[in-house]
Amino acid sequence: MKQFLSFVRKEFYHIFRDTRTMMILLGMPIVQIILFGFAITTEVKNTKVAVYDPSNDVSTQRIINQLGTSEYFSIDHFLDNPEDIQKDFREGKVSLGLIFSNNFNENLLRTGEASVQLIADATDPNLATTVVSYASNIISGYQQELLREYHVPFQIIPTVRMLYNPEMKSAYNFVPGVMGMILMLICAMMTSIAIVREKEMGTMEVMLASPMKPIYVIISKMVPYFVISWVNLTTILLLSVYMLGVPVSGSLFWLNILSLIFILVALALGLLISTIVDTQVAAMLASGMGLMMPVLLLSGMIYPIENMPHILQWFSCIIPARWYIAAVKKLMIEGLSVSFVLKELAILIGMAVVIITVSLKNFKTRLE
Image (cartoon, rainbow, N blue to C red; front, side, top):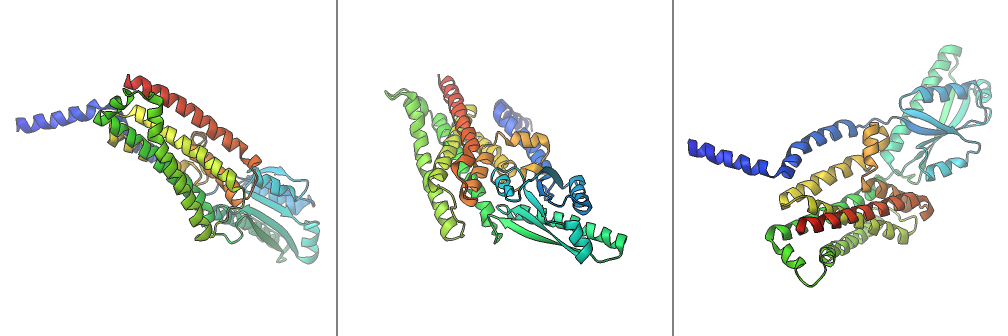
């Protein structure tokens, strides 16, 4: 029995000796329960709304006030021209447009009918459907108030318009997200594991002792995954266009440039992970769980970022996939020009420079 307990104690010593692995094993469940608990929600809250109200009468004001006081909506600004709503959607300022007809209250009292247009961004069909449903319910609730007040069955007819994805195809939403997830998986995970494997086998020191400069050795490990990721990108785009029917509405050139920059960021993350961990198992946990979970939950791929607590919204800003997916939707789905994704491009380039600089410096220090 003593021998058995001594073996058990020895195994505990082996586990506790690797502090980085211990942090992953004990810290990951805490991070996951926080992310799953706060990030996963089917509710849509604080949706920004732009309003065009040419009538500015008692009925439109009451509907606007009910929208604004609801937990689901936040009145962002009022429009001077209904055509300006297109600009707001392109710049990502709002998720819903509310366009009232002229003489809204007068038509309602005189004819018993009035119309209002609900415009939503359907690049995320589920989000658009939910937002329109919430707004329609609030308008329907106002109709019931008028019925109780006047005992007349007034009818407010909402006209729904879905931008960018009128057919409400779900592929329009998940294709950009899948692109970000696959590229992150291939680049970060495989690069980190490949480099750590060389360190575990002791061949990395041999390679660094060769006449080739160390930086070229590291870059040579990254280039194959860069090429493979570009091939995967091409495959995804071909399947999306010809099998799923998702068009590349914007510039294919800038979509490729954006994707190559994101691939570079993912490769840099893989290199950074390889400087932190010493085993392939730890590299797989750090890159697989440490990167993939935030990509799935905090990038806007599945759940709207606006619905999350403010601390998670702030944390999502350091997730490269958030900016990549948002830019892909603008270029690929919405068909916008590159001028509308300059912010995302600048952030990804900045991330690439910072992560590569830190990774190379840390890598050289660890191997000396």
